[in-house]
Image 1: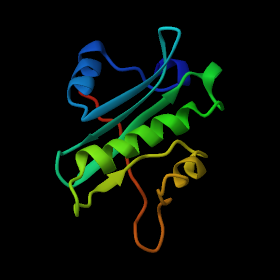
Image 2: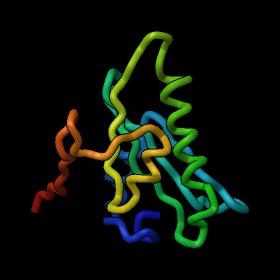
Image 3: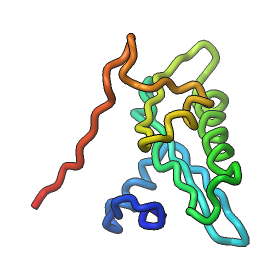
Amino acid sequence: MRKAVGWKELENNLALKTIENTLFLVTAVDDGKVIGLTRVGGDGGYTMFITDVIVLPEYQNKGIGNKLMAKAMQYIKEEFLQKGQTVMVYLMSAKGREPFYGKFGFVARPNDEFGAGMTQWVSRE
C-alpha cells in the first residue's frame, strides 16, 4: 500500500514489527481487497499518534479516508480513554493535506502554542 501512494517501502521484518506494535488498525476492504488503512500507535499512556492514513489512488476522494480517520478517533475517545482522561494525539500530515486533518480537530503547526513538527529517516548502513 505504501508503494501505491508513493511512500517509502518497509522491509518485511520492520513492517511486521510495526503491525505487531500498533495499538489500533482499521482497514477499508472492497471485494476482499484492502484498499485503505490507518493505524494508531503510542506509548499506551498519554501520547498517541495517527499514522499511515493510506487509501489506494483509485479509491481516493470517495470518503474512505474520512471513515478511516473517524474510526481511529472513535477508538481513542471511546475505547482507549477512560472517563476524565486526556491524551495528546499527534500526526504528520502530508503536504497539502492539513485541511483534511483539520476536520478532525487537528491544528497545523507551527502556531502560537506549538512549534513545527519535525521528522527524519534514520538508517544504519
